[in-house]
Length: 188
Image (cartoon, rainbow, N blue to C red; front, side, top):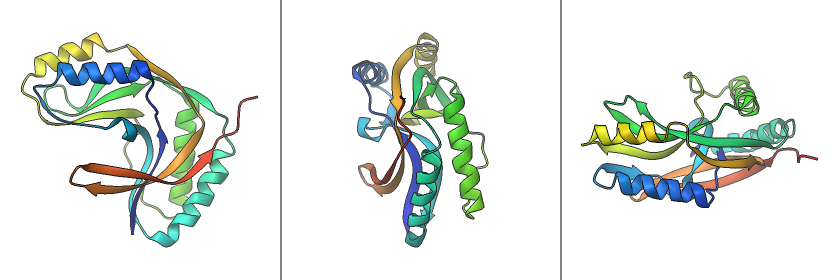
C-alpha cells in the first residue's frame, strides 16, 4: 500500500517566500505547524492508501488527461482559513479562479471514479495549505491579517505538469515523493 495524492507542485518565488516568512513571524506566538516550502502544492485529488498494483494505471490515466491540457497560469492570492475564523484549523492561500484548473481537477475526479477509486465528495476549493493550527490564542490578530491580505497577489505561476505523489508521514511531518510527473502541452 502507498498513501498517494495527485497535485500541482508550487515552487514559491521570492515574493511568496517573503509573504510566508512575514506570516510566520506575525503569528510566531501561535501554535501552528507550518508547511515546508518544498511541500507547497495544490491538491487535485487525495486518494489515501492504494494498492501498489494500481499505480501504473493511475500513471497512464494522468498521462492521458494531462496531454489534453495546455500549460496555464495560476494566481496565488489572498489569505484565508478553513473551518471558521473563530476556530481556524488551516491557514491557506487562495487560488484565483481558473477555469482550466477546475476542468482539469473535475476530469481527474471523473476518471478516478470510473476506475473505481473513492474520491472526496466535497466541493473542490483550490488552495495552498500554509499551516495547520494547533492552538490560536489571538484570533483577533489572525482576523486582522486575513483582512489585510484578503486580495494580496502572492505569486503568478505557469503550471506545466500534474504530479502523482506518495505521502509518507513521519515525526517531523509528511515527506512527499513524486512517483510520476505528467506534462501538460506546451504553449506555442
